[in-house]
Amino acid sequence: MAERIREIRFKHFRGLPDYICKLDGKSIVICGGTGKGKSAIVDGIEFIFSGIIRRFHGEGSGNIDADDAIRHVLKKDIPLIEVAFTPTNATIKRCLGDEGLTVPERPTIKEYIERHPPSGSFILRRQQLLEFIYDQEAKRYQKYIRLLGLDSVDSTQKVVIEAEQNISQATSETEIRLQQLLQLFRIDKLNWSPRSSIEILTKCSELSQNLGCRVIAAWDQIEEVLLDLDAKRSRETKEKIDKLNVAIDRLSTNISTKIEEEALLLNQLHEQLQINQAESVEAKKGEIIKEGIRYFQEYPDTKVCPLCERPLESGYHEVFENLKARDKALSELREREKLQTVHIDTLITEIQKEIHQLEQEEKDHSVYPEEQRALLLTQKNNLVEWIKKIKEVKERKTYKIIEISPAIQGIRSIRSSLYSHLAKERNELIKSDAVAIEETFSFLQRARDKRMEIEAAETNVKKVQKILQQMQAVREAFSRAREVAIQQIFTIIAKKLFHIIKIYMVHEIAPKMLNVRA
Image (tube, rainbow, N blue to C red; front, top):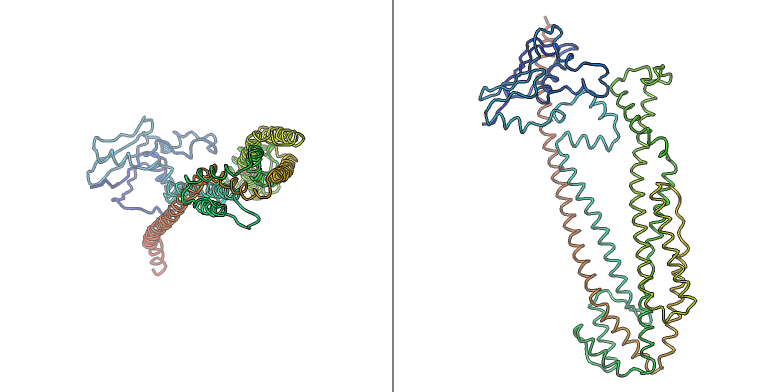
């Protein structure tokens, strides 16, 4: 049978020379006027389970001697708190000056002490209530959840939501990549765009049959058809056409617009940061501001500034509200600075992707005109320099507006011009009667080379979509579990409140009513 507290005895403790608080394993309500010992009982409970009374230590305690404050005013003996349990009648105790709690060698009592929560989680004092009332909504919500014992559920739910957001972003990026690969196979003159690798294979078979080649029913049959088509091609121009086809395929992949999007988001954030630019002065005062809020919460009737000891001419309330506004602005600043880091890292990653793509395209420079080849190399170097400037913004923690490098638009323009130029050059090399052969050969060759990449992208899309659905289900399950837990806790609280009101009616209201009647 589990141990329960039968009674708590206070000896020479604060205002209680010798007092026994009987619980009989039940909850109690402490009622009484000022100076009747309510705080002493709570202090005693905190003292026996933690060894200290927190409000006599640290900030706001002034010159209070913690040990002296614990002693009874007559100081006849050493302060002692003793807890008796039922059904074993065993006791635990703590005296002022003891190094630890005296616990009997009983497994049930030891288990009770080991499983008992720390005093901070079951003792709620006036200062904490005031902090809760005046806190920002987000902090108040966190404390409220912690008070209900749902902080682990809530933190896990936040992790799940964050994971779901990351997977959702990964899903979007994977789908975009798949679409980019599929768009390499669009045929503008037929107004045709594939939606899957199966549709590409079907189109390969259709184009093959139009030239009198065999039906393509599987990917490994493409190679045989390519050999047949290669035999029909012009010997004089096919090597040059192959190089042009590879270059044109690379140029078909457009430069992502995500660079401009991330730069826009970052600049909008920098504008917000410039508005509350408190980094140099206000941020350094952050801890002082928090201490000021704590001080005014603990001493709401103060009329004098605790620093300069001058009267608060504007009044305590106005000073307190000003401190809260400054603290809120600092919190917003820190959150925006975290976002700044995320957006800068994302922007740098996107620019590096484009640099990598340009480096891949350097393999095709032999078919590029010399002037445009030199321009591309220059623009690539400009992107490298741009990354250095963005990293400086991050390292110096400035809110400078980031100007989008002209190199991005310049690269788009050059690649578009190159695409048109190389496509025209390729078409001029192809004899009119061999156009269909070259177009089909290029399409099948591209399908063969990109098959693995497209199928991998399709598999990844399915995987991340499945994971996203699972994460959404987990999040919904956590939300339902949390709601059920809150409802159950509120039901318990409602019963406890009803019990408290009943006790209060019996011990406080009823006697007064009887006195009135008498």
